[in-house]
Image (cartoon, rainbow, N blue to C red; front, side):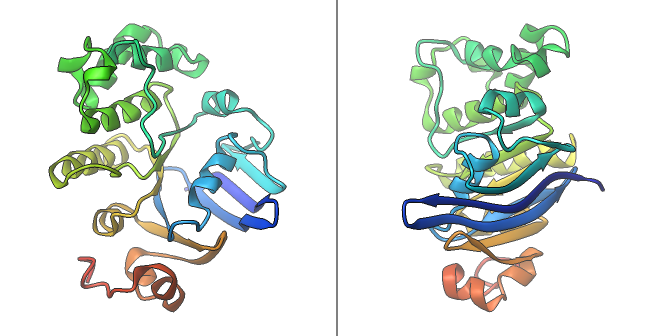
Length: 247
């Protein structure tokens, strides 16, 4: 598989703090990869750098064969790199359908034809078709999470970055989101890069893990390798692979 995302020496400082330090990795087309690390490891800062929400101090980011490092968020989305956020950010005052239709108006998505039909297909895909005409203010939190997926998918991404998609969800709701992520990857071939603290679900979803601590990559490997890695155990896990349901 060819490299869809190439990151080389990416670095970001905030005053005296180096939040992301010389981070380098590649992501192949069709791959589902996880980023693991404790709070403050630099994971979300990395996402913000990749999607144009923060400028980098140094490094290179190539997506689909082109540099995106100096592009703005909407330009990066139109290249085919979309994301969700830790906190749900719907457009208030609009319906569920209208929230998704806004994404379908992005230049990349408009190339695929009828944007209203696209929105309906996506809402059905994420399980919100029956709530399409409801105002977003009445959605329970689990459905707001699904709406985050729908709005990102509306832009027709080649690569989807998921920032803690299980945050705030109950056990029953997490199962539905796991199923959605698996379907997007396994059946539709969507490339996915995911940050998550729910280790059991995270490790069972991803094929490869990039472990970070203090802004640096400390290990890269398959889930079963990562949970045995001494630096990962020391910095984050603190439990053996059997407890994670991986053994």
